[in-house]
Image (cartoon, rainbow, N blue to C red; front, side, top):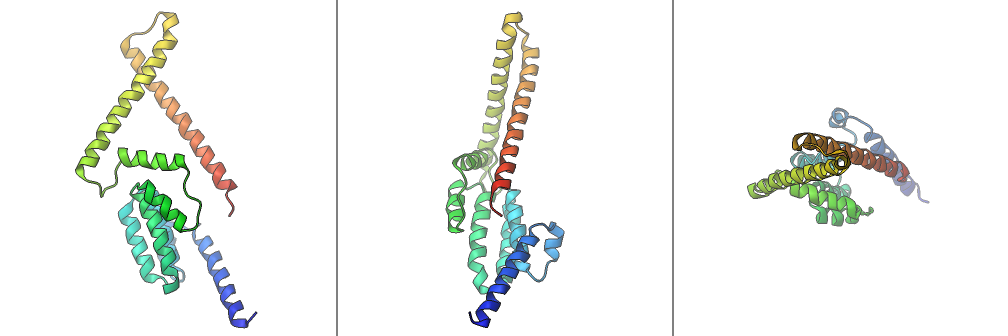
Length: 200
């Protein structure tokens, strides 16, 4: 192997290791990064998209592209497309963008959850009608959950003579909160297991 090619491969491996180390740094440390500025800004953009802050993510990726070398810009643009699709809750675009990155696309369950979030909590760029629709859907969902909780409490209390409406509603609310808490804990545990099982 020619010495120049060997040097380029060593530099690329060193850059990759440095970028992986950057992922462990805080936002403040990434902002202060100078040697791998484009990578640091890309990580900040990805973090902003995970918080569904599309405006901040777009700003970080614009700065990352400006700071990147020409051969890095295409990959950063693809990363920006995927991150902005996530931040703006565009499930179909997210699937396509992740595949262009050469990564496994999100599961059907994850895409369904993103679509549901897009309906319930639309992005800031959505119009006023989308936001009003989201509020109405949230109210309908709350009423439906309370009705399910009330029905469960009434069924359980029926052999004991039943309960009044107010105590049943209160107990139904507690049942719904407990069920949501259990579902969130199970989902978090599955996500952590999948993250630990993913190849580094």
